[in-house]
Length: 59
Image (tube, rainbow, N blue to C red; front, side, top):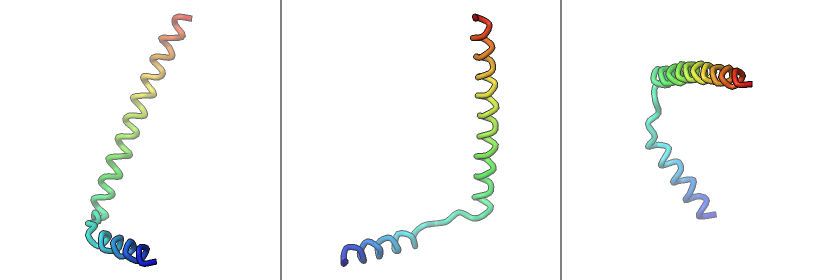
């Protein structure tokens, strides 16, 4: 039981050291992730279509 209490005390001490990002920073990072995901999905979708047509042209 002592080990569990020591562990939880350490967790609480470490959580007090955490610097949480502001709401604006989180929103900015979220926008970057969403835009990057959409761009990459479109790129890989186009590449997939091009490869599909290339392969279909051989058969």
